[in-house]
Length: 162
Image (cartoon, rainbow, N blue to C red; front, side):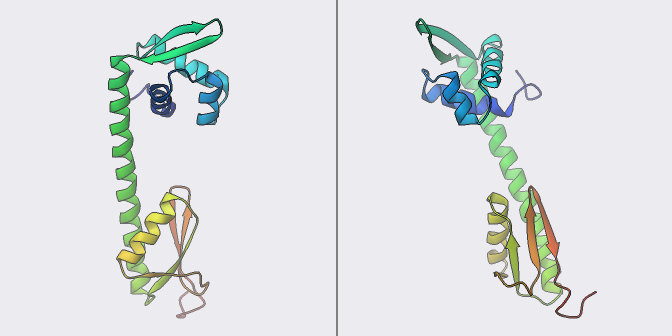
């Protein structure tokens, strides 16, 4: 399996199987938030690729064993995940820095951040680092976090901007 065929679920499945080889497909599906059939498909794929072995321990109970190749894949997927996360962090931070320059050029010293999750947290931390206060007031610019996007809405009521 290479980067083109690796699924986002593969890393999570390999981690869960390593932590609990006796996990059922139902418990793995609940953990991933997907259907049992989806987990079954992913596990069969991992078995066919040689990353996981299966051993029957009872009539209806299976144990999943990660092979050395599976451990190597998990390490590779972990590194890829971390690298992608840092790229997203850097991209978001650069975007917010650019937007904060616009905010400062317009004479504002505070912004409102809407949205939640990691992206909003990156916005808040970048604001604090740049000495731009984060407020809940409606009369200042807003950094709106929409998924992976950060959008600046300038308040046009104040400062006479068009």
